[in-house]
Amino acid sequence: MRAIGHDQTWRKLTAAYDGERLAHALLFSGPPGVGKSIVAEDFARRIACSADNRPCGECNPCRQVEARAHPDIRIVAVAAGKKEIGVDTAREIKRFTQMRALDADTKVVLIHDADRLSVAAQNALLKTLEEPPGRSVIMLLSETPGALLPTVRSRCQRVQFAPLDDESLRAVLLQQGVEADQLEELLATAHGSPGRALAIRALIKDGEFTRLDSAIAGSETDRYVAWVNLARTLDGNESEMTARFEVLEEMLQQRLSQAARATDGNSGELDRDLRRLALIADARHLFRRTNANRPLLAEALALRMSRI
Image (tube, rainbow, N blue to C red):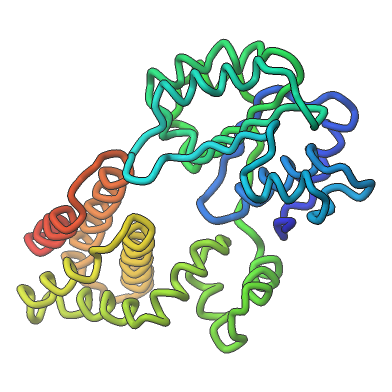
């Protein structure tokens, strides 16, 4: 599935590959949910595809890439229950690139959330990034490329992904089955990210958006109940909790925007929301980087926010 809104990036990648000018290490960076993964996996399919109109999505190599079963394409991500990609995986990537390609012209390694490579793993990859053996390309995907070692970043060609414009975002959401009456609300809160829009849509559908809003709105009038409810609503599995953190940040940002426009705004409340926003950002970073207990993290965040 071609990512909508990134046609220019796609043309540059394919032209560089076809002209044998593609860098051997690429760093795809940009906000979450804007299409980096779709472009990267589609590009891997194009490299492996055996049809004239690449990627066709129907030939055996394309299906193998889709099923994570192509012998020359390796897709790496943080393992379930883990918070980082370890050094053993980096060494396996090195061995993989040293082997001769079996079916495709080029061996491909795609690393999701590359900023979650451990320091040891990043160091182990340095030589491979600088001088990959044989004909191969390594794509690193990251929302926070600054978390990568400078030595890693310097060995990669940056491919920057921007948020989608409203027209492209609308097209993606319609393609994903979003109802027309929800489009404008999602466009206003998604900040150009289809992934963010779909996460918010799921929360709205499940009623969690309303519960989060009620917890924030009631934080001054019924503090204890409001913050207990917030802790319960935030808890969930990794993807659910990440989406809830993002939605909570969005709500506070909206409150801050409204307060900034108001002529009789409460400076004390504005300061409290700014501090709460910083706490959420810290909690989200801790959650992403460590094996923190999810219910305890949610409770600790709600307690700290209640004390502001």
